[in-house]
Structures are given as C-alpha cells and as structure tokens.
Image (cartoon, rainbow, N blue to C red):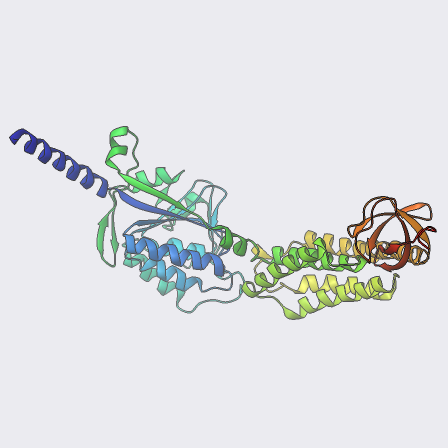
Length: 433
C-alpha cells in the first residue's frame, strides 16, 4: 500500500514538472504585414495584436509594406508602441521593404531588425492614398516611441531616402540583421525590453535539440490573412480595381450579343461587385471614373447600332483620359502602370469597336434566317424535352417544344423564334387529319 502511494506521488510530481516546463514556453505570434495596410489588413492586425496582448505573447511583425492606404499610420504605430507585450519588427526576407507607415512601425517597436538586402524607408509618404499629407509633430512622436523602448535617438532630419539594411543599422533605425525568423529570435534571446507593464527579458531561443524541443523553449505561431480578408485585401489596390472594372464591364457588355443572361453576365456582376468594394477602400477621383464609364457607354451605343462611328473614337479617348485621372492623386508605389492603361485602351477599342459589333452582326444574320423559317415543316432529330435538335430547311437548329415533349423523328412546324431557338409544335400527319 505504501509503495502504491509513493508511486502515485511520484507520477503526480512528474506531471507537475512537465506542466511547469510546458508553461515556460514563450509564445511568439509571427504576424505578416504584406502589401499596403488597407482597411482589411488593418482590421486583421488590430485583431491579432489584441489577441497577443491577452495571451501575453511576444509579437513579431514581418514587414513588407510601403505604408497605409487611406488609414491612420501614426495611430497604428502608436498602438504598436503601447502594446503591453514585447514587439519585434523585422523587414524580411529580401526584397522586402518598410517605408511610410511601415517605417513608423519600425520606430514604434521594442526591437527593429532587417534582412540583408531589404529596404528601409523612405518615411514619406506615410499614407499612399494621400502622399502630400505630413502629420504634425511627427519627429517628436517618433522620439517619444524610441525613448519609451530605451532605443537610441535617430537622425530624423536626414534626407528622406531609401536605406539599405546596413545603412538602417548604422543610422539606428534597426539594431539587428537577421536572415530568418529563427535567426532573429535566437539573436534577441536574453535581451531586456521595456513595456508599459515593466521590463521583460526575452526567452526566445529556438530549440535545436530534442531536449530543448521537449522543454518547449518557443511556441512559434505563424499568422496570415484568412481567405475572405485575403480577397478583400487583394482587390483593394488601384491596379486591381481598374482591372476588375474593365473586365467586369466587358463581360456585361458581352451579354448584349446573347439572347439571355448567362455565365459571362454573372461573372461580370461578380467582378464589378469586387471592384465596387475596392473603391470603398481605395479613394478615387470620381471625375476620372465617370470619364472611364462614360467612355465605355459611348462605345456600347455604337455596338448597339452595329457601326463604328465618332462615338467609338470619343469613347476610347474618354476611357483613356479617365483611366489616367482616376487614381492620379495616389503615391507612385501604387499608381497604375502606364503600360496597363495603354494595353487596356487598345484592347477596349478592339473589343467594343470590332469584336462585339461583329458578334452582333453575326447574331442578326442568324436571327433573320431563323425568322424566315417560321411556318416551315421540319423533323425532330432527337427528343424535345422541351429542347432538342430540329432539322429544318437543310440545317440543324436548336428547337423548343411549346406543347410538351416531342419524340424523335416527329414532324414539327416552326411557330416562332426565341432568341436563337426555334419554337416548334408537332405537325399532324396526313393520317391524323
């Protein structure tokens, strides 16, 4: 009995030791900040930062961004600076960059690191949607963040130019060069960093042996945008909005050549809907958008009247001018490429001026031919349930029964035309009369 009791106590003691060892593992939340920090990405960041705070995890922000997009970059950096947990900002891997609000996050973090070959800065523009804006007292704000984390002051009045990784370290913007997340965590292991909750000694040594792994030195958690936010983030750029609008409206215009509303139409609606969402995130020049859509409207008018007139040329010019003006006020980093605009203008002219017009003319010829078949007698070459093949006047057509199913081989009479479909009825045989 005594041996059983001792054995039980030993098992309990081992369980406590294992649990204590597991609890010592440092949770590191690796949060990727990829692309312009727009509304979807900012919402994701705020959610992850709040979760890391509540869990007491170390935050590692993996940066590759040119700044915010119609969002408050200073407020975001201030949120990072005042986190109750240690925050590490790392630009990597190459050719990653951190400029604008991304550079502010570097200043606001407890520790800033760079990847050899990465780019740091420039600081301006902070907001890519409003490149001319300069926040008031920004230098004092940055100095406050650096002092709060015990980091040395930097030369904020130096020329606002991109810096190499080594220049960023020499200038005090970063303190460490690291080639990977694990390399960075090993280099900062043991460092003491101040936080609003007091100084914290980082225990971020990544396990390299089985014994260290069993002790649970670091619990690495890599975070990325979910599928919905990834789509929202993906469509929230001027180039993507422009592409979605051009292709979506073209798909809708294609339905003009069809008798009904099919796959192209539904695809066009979906693409335009994504573009409209993007416009709610990225500010645009509404005059430019109006010129773009107005130009397409003029092209559609010429398509409807089946000709190439002055309206087509005016529409192409309006479309091109609107394409240039729509996002002329954004920073060069996200401005639409002139090559994309030029290609879209040429493709739009060819598509509306020739392709759709030829398609409509071909459809008109088919419809006129079908109307000439009204009253003629043909044969059902397959069962009509209610649609099926119909042979009339030496050609095979798509027929549709107006009075129920018609078996194959039956004589049918054409009673009308529905778009590109012959509406038929059974033709009584001589024996039935």
